[in-house]
Amino acid sequence: MLTLNFNPFPQISTQRLLLRAISPNDANEIIAIRSNKETMKYIDRPLTVSTEDALQLIKKIIDHAAANEAITWAITLQNNSSLIGTIGFWRVDKEHYRAEIGYLLHAGYHQKGIMQEAISAVLDFGFTTMQLHSVEANVNPANAASKKLLEKNKFIQEAYFKENFFYNGKFLDSVIYSLLRPLQ
Ligand SMILES: CC(C)(COP(=O)(O)OP(=O)(O)OC[C@H]1O[C@@H](n2cnc3c(N)ncnc32)[C@H](O)[C@@H]1OP(=O)(O)O)[C@@H](O)C(=O)NCCC(=O)NCCS
Image (cartoon, rainbow, N blue to C red; front, side, top):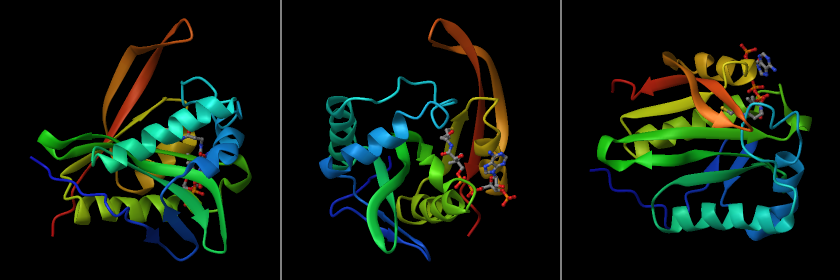
């Protein structure tokens, strides 16, 4: 069984980014990202529009890390502490050393290589520090940006589930990608 320890919270620094713990002070930035219909087009979850909903989401993220159950980082630029996105292993299956990765970036920062920089550091953390054996991603088949990002990082499409996800009165398809821990 995997043993996780996210206390103290493990910040990650990359060339342009600082991945840090999320806090209630990030509520407005979370709303700015999660209330944008275009950004949320393939997330298939309700938009976050109220401060109350944003704080609830932030609390869940903080509680999961404090309990060593899952981890999500706030993505910030090195020279500016404002949250511009999130990335994390938001669901961890300790018994099987497997986690599901999720990420979301403010539309103003898309296609600048930011998520590539973040995912590469987070995958390294997942395999090296957390000792995961595999990482899964569950993607809406129409989400070309996310599929491209995963394929660039050597994720393999392992499944295509037809109409397995019921959202907003519709049954949606899902693509399941996975990446095994690289051989040492
Ligand atoms: C998916 C997402 C995180 C990508 O972030 P990003 O910082 O723009 O991605 P990057 O700039 O690091 O690009 C990574 C690769 O994906 C490609 N890519 C990015 N956006 C793309 C798009 N809209 N269409 C096609 N390819 C795209 C890039 O060209 C790059 O590949 P390349 O180096 O071979 O050119 C961003 O589009 C996003 O936040 N989308 C909304 C939330 C979401 O869908 N999350 C995923 C849920 S599964």
